Image (cartoon, rainbow over all chains, first blue to last red):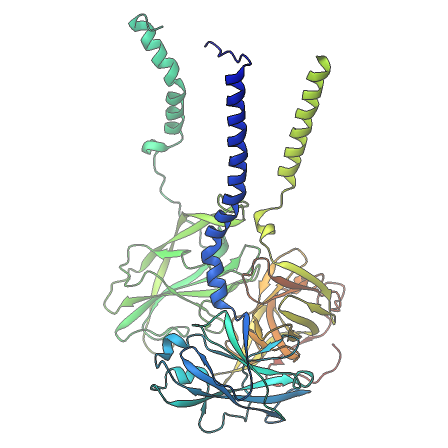
Length: 193
Length: 193
Length: 198
């Protein structure tokens, strides 16, 4: 092969400058493309994770009714005490919500319905079964309500029973998470004593 | 370069030497059906057989017309039962014993056996390392199926690879037919379990 | 000129050593994705990611008595039954603790028994924050796997990079031949023997 001579001259230095310009542009493009690639490949996992976790709270004042998952939710009652067979230093708490049904397709809107109690430290309690204690008449838990065939305009009382340690009872607040609204969830203020 | 036909042939042979050598060695090692197929050996019945994950010792085989070790059968069915003492040779609790025995020459409605611990009729429990248990393999058969007085069962084993090809993790792979065992098959009448 | 060749050789040698060293010391894929252990001893509270666990008692028996579907069942084994009592608490949110494994001194892993079916005090244990729950883990083990064993407790069986509590069972008394000195002939899961020694 015969070599191409690189004699220094005005034309050659222009080539070098053009090459340097393109190298700089490629470097800048890399700095843009790499994060974009990471974002694109992880987009599906990120979306799935966000839709599976209750992350962002929407606070609701007591007495306020808020649209959530196609229906209007309001905290009806939060009361606690000793009932049934409880472990030491624990209270039974019942939280009930008054819900006015807007979109009756509950199987889609309320899929993955979760009633929780959260305290000031961010701990969360899910409903428990207490031997000898059942929900009062007229109150259903969320999963039963999905299949109960309610119609638009009906008002349903949804509630559940929790076991909470003594030191958390003063600061617990009820919260509701629905599959159709994740990562947002509703957090209600306690009723005034 | 390619001046004469002889030199052309020389070039071809030089270029193809590696390929020819590879094909020759592969043929010697058994590709292209070059090696004679060995019949799997008859395995002895009086000693324990090391079959991959399991050390097995067959005990007896019979045909049962009634419920056997808690396995229910559809009406009009009978069951081929093989009892064997099995020991887990691996380093953790395992339940991959479904393919160890396969009856030869029988038309089975469902090739997957029901496997019960003879000790207390638990279905498909995990077997723990080094602990020998008597297991009953139950194959349901049509009520009028003909079972010979002496039946061969194929024993399948796997090889242990400390690092597999995909994740580099230890595991048991490549099931192969270790041999056959031949047992006399008694016929247990319908009374009793 | 010679210095340049020498310099190149030194750099080449250093690269070879570095690359080979990195290849040889790279952890195995199974170790890279293994659960992260949280070590502790008996009676210590061990903090795993989603739960806290404290091992209270280990009892050995030759047979177990349990109530299954309304019938009393006596479960026998070719080795020994080990009934481990733990206290479980969740850390941040209500969760379940489902997996218990008995790891022998040589690394053999005995998974919790499936022969007991569903019982309220058997895994998966539902735990809540701030509330201690008594959870049992039952294993079938050969008697020679007791001395130097450890208990592995995790939230689920296959949890890559999740926490796994590893409790060493040095506090379990064993006699000279490795067998525990007091093996009960029978242990009733529904009426456990009164709290005596642990």
